[in-house]
Image (cartoon, rainbow, N blue to C red; front, side, top):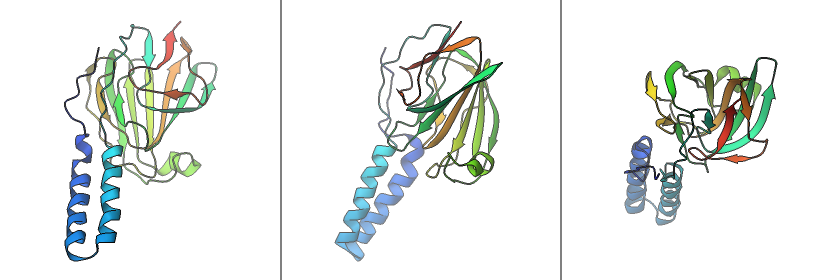
Length: 201
């Protein structure tokens, strides 16, 4: 089923895009054509970053865990009681964060912070972060260098692939119990609404 998408650009990008376009016009009129052209290119880059593409939604089964966002799997950790999938989200990916399964949803914590490289040790302590809970699955988002302010919907019942918020760039860590079998591999490109990360055993 095609995801109903009435907006080509994410509303989170409206202010920065319009502000950049206005500055470009002013520079074009009063300062320099060359500098203005550079700013116009920057506006097109912003349009690409904040794009909101339509997706064909996978009809998820109750035990399917879909990727909540586009990105690349950079690590998988397994221990006695839990396992984690690490997804690196770049500016070239689509940035809509979606529910990975049909579940009760809760925004457990939201913390402002710095915008250091999300793969550094200091980033895990100092960067802006959010922790989201989907039944027995916990998702932690660590903001990267280019992220905007984190903002997600509040507690509610949610369906697989429903939009929860926007995450521009950084690290997404999906933690689940060992009652799930992971179906993805390191360095695999994953997409929200279509890639199945795990199934319940």
